[in-house]
View 1 (cartoon, helix red, strand yellow):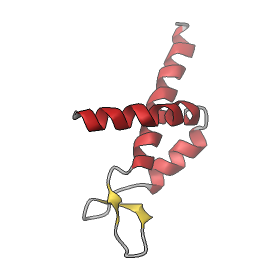
View 2 (cartoon, helix red, strand yellow):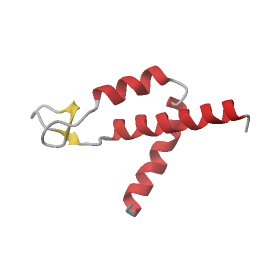
View 3 (cartoon, helix red, strand yellow):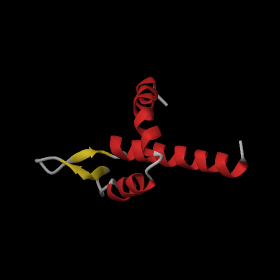
View 4 (tube, one colour):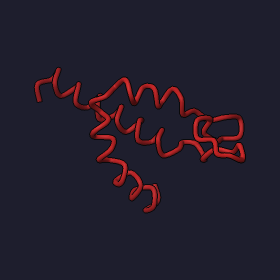
Length: 80
């Protein structure tokens, strides 16, 4: 992972932490923000018709939220 990618992940972390408690939100984002055949996000289209490179920032945040949710669930079940 590059330094820029690491910085992006840190910037997304507070939003992912907050979104982790809203599984209906991150599930919908993960379902909507998928790549097209050119590797662009289908939900992040702009007026020219091209989308952000996939995975887009919203997909990354939602995926991080899903990971945090799973970690929290595991802690609750495991009692840690």
